[in-house]
Image 1 (cartoon, rainbow, N blue to C red):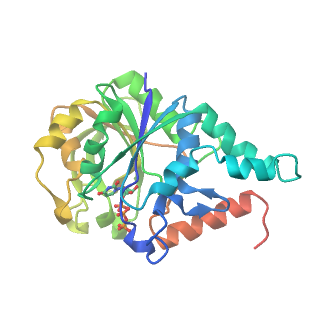
Image 2: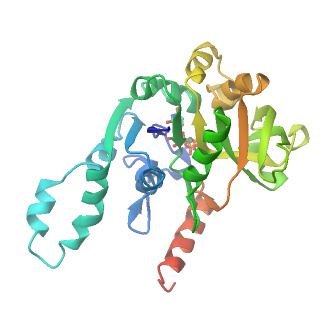
Length: 277
Ligand code: UTP
């Protein structure tokens, strides 16, 4: 059972400055909904009700967003705008939210380690809300939980990317599991390789299921690529013991941490909503 979903949301979002000077990147909207809300909804529809969010200084609006706003309610109740409250209140009522602050932004691996007190000693999901995923059937996390239930080890979601972009990702070297077209045993992995040293075009995207041993590994790690503590380096330790599966998920994914990905996601969701642009 996966009961908790961790959302590392403490990064600076420098690629979106000046927008992210006072507004967390994870609160930037695609149409009317913040990126982080899409992630929480994905976790909920995968059957997870405990949301554990790693925040940092300047990110208090995240906590306010996933809470009641009595002032807004008293203004809107009884008016023709009351329905605006429903969506967010439903979400808040269905899930519990816990928070912890990452004190220094030392990378994704460090953010996940900072979340340890919120997830304890059990396998947990990780969603990077700036990777926005969408598809019509089972969502990405639901697909991954099915894979986890079969293999009971850490799972990373992967996608084929053009080799010219490979240096933006963690990249796996793996071999297909028998009779499968989308499940790989991971032999090795490397963070942000140069094109010529990349072992494949299979890039890790922002969805993970991690087993709790990852915390002991993270505690021992020295900063890797770009001086940060990388989750890829911790997963490599598990992979070398045969304990990581990569899953080529079904669906679309938008890198909303980059401006082009953010604009593509906006266009995609606008079209889906029938908005003419
Ligand atoms: P990114 O690598 O996109 O970094 O983080 P960033 O700081 O958010 O953005 P840029 O590169 O400066 O524009 C991927 C995810 O990991 C979280 C981010 O909030 C984002 O959800 N993260 C990253 C942390 O929580 N802490 C960190 O120290 C680094």
